[in-house]
Image 1 (cartoon, rainbow, N blue to C red):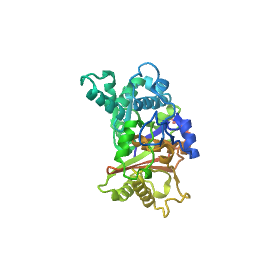
Image 2: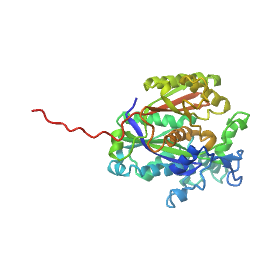
Image 3: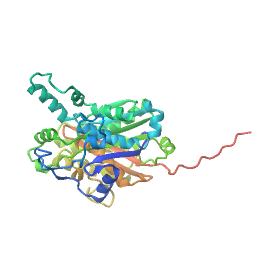
Image 4: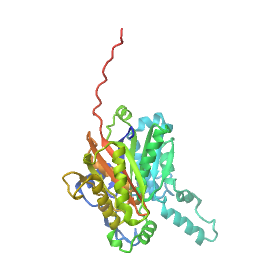
Length: 384
């Protein structure tokens, strides 16, 4: 159990830049996956969830963005939009604002382009030095902090499809350890030809059974409920707990995730019947996705996981594509979008899950369990 709440969030997705396009698309169940222009996105995928009309120049600015890669620009944009909700606090104590940002491999395009230049150039060192920083994994997190004046702890987390949940867990520990008073966390992913090729060859033979690729970012402001109230922000969800577990055989994903969810609910003192919103991941393909939803149904005691009477399923994979490292962060954003501007209601519980095909499962439990608006302070009298 933690004392942190999510009080603000920001999304950059295939629906567009900003929370409103994302909220409108998710609540309407409208797919943002569209046919790709083969000239702009050559590669094996004919469709994808790409942020429309996005570039560093148009969304971050003309100055200092000539060599900024796509995933960094997406992250800087998402963090910048969130900063607007806590600008006063950031200006007062920038050294007490932490940032935990998840990524896949950084920018795969930057890594491969830089390596290619070194191998094909007249000399191995005839490369554009200004683009070398794009090849390191923490480029997006570092640039987001520099760009927006965040001077607290800065951490990059990478964990495949579970990256967003791992970043959330790390952010909680960072705050619990006293390293920052507020923390932003989330994840970002880019759509590039290089990533598409790597993903295509890494998937099962039946590519049609899996979702097309997507990209985007979701970032969250985490603070105490008291800090949120002081800043005029309404707590949207309390982070109750996160849990992770491994499995060594593809057939063991169901059992591992079911145990993981049970442990998380027990740690959060939540009954399975209290869960109202569930946001599953893509599960690394159709077979693991089926195991994921079966595991959720087993852990929550659902005779039929497809029964809409008891819980509401928030399935965003088919709507925005497989955003890989950003997937679980976008799932969490979809839960908040579904809950509405007032967030999760008191007693309402949401579950976000994910399965990484390399042998790991994870989940996060969030709840709405506080009075709002805060009750007025009761005046006290001094004892005679």
